[in-house]
Length: 112
Image 1 (cartoon, rainbow, N blue to C red):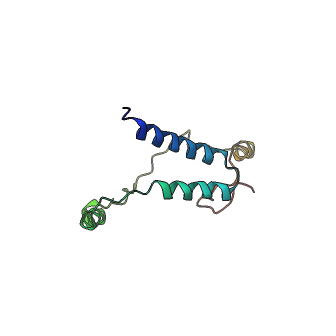
Image 2 (cartoon, helix red, strand yellow; image 1 turned 60 degrees about the vertical axis):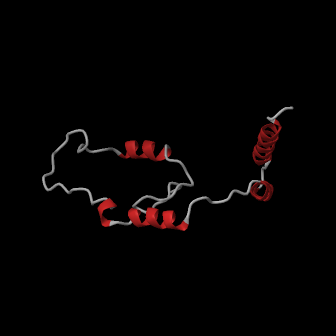
Image 3 (cartoon, helix red, strand yellow; image 1 turned 120 degrees about the horizontal axis):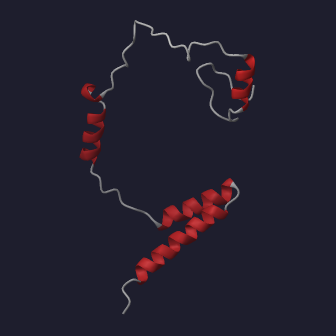
């Protein structure tokens, strides 16, 4: 009698779902496969409410918060970092930026 049959079936099922997810080229078929997978693989949460509460209580304790980084009053000159840069250097760097990314602190998108 082969005792590995359930494991083989589970592995085959998971491979089937992964292949369905890889083959999906549109959002509808992707989410259909995800929902199907979630229905077949329902797992029970074994973490008790008290453990969740304890975990998140520790996260927000003042002792675990990170302090602001120290500020430096003395500026140390650096000839490499303080040198002037040309407009050509700026253009070359801007061309290497990826499009469709979130804006930085200047709120300018890379597409400009």
